Image (cartoon, rainbow, N blue to C red; front, side):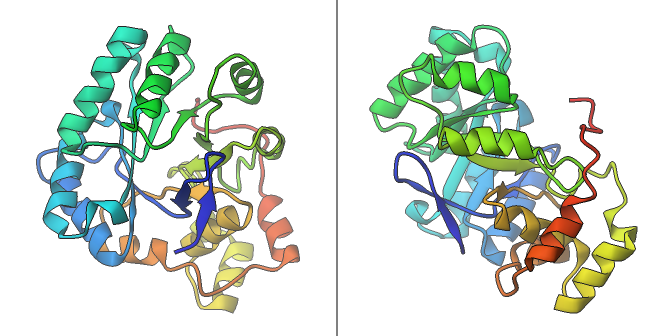
Length: 266
């Protein structure tokens, strides 16, 4: 598995398994266990997804050593503020059944997120969080944040796919040494990439699926991709992207799909 180096020298797997909108009490457990058996070593959840306990149970039952699995979770808005954030971190760790979390993110730039970040900084210094970052931070918000906080974020998880390439945002993250991470790397079901003739042509050339091409495109841009699926074959397919490489022209062709705005309403 390819990895990227964070600005604190920790490494993060280039492809993770996302569990957004997968129900707790069974479905998330089954999907996470399937992903781990398929070779994923990076699982992305959040307090707001309400399925951290299933993720933790699957990790425990997988039989894979905890040190080999990179766990990401996120602090939800209800836990913003310094004291609330401390409790939120503790709750996430308890639900996940771990004594540290590899990456913990502020879910959005809303409310008292600066105080919440201070609590995350303190937990980071104690080793409870091995890396800290943000999610859904627009470039101008990220710039202000980086220049205000003591410990700058290591990751910014935002919407990134060929229909919303966010090139300028990526330039900002690169300048501040913040690793970009993609939610909805396949477009979140709002577009029709699997019907695009250009994408189908590139996929056929490499004997890959359109989904694999889209994920490979993001990874080659230096972006961590976190696809989500509950289908066994798709879960296996989404991690199988490291035996081919898109050329420069193909990268440009895929980027030309950019609409310049998000279709998610986010």
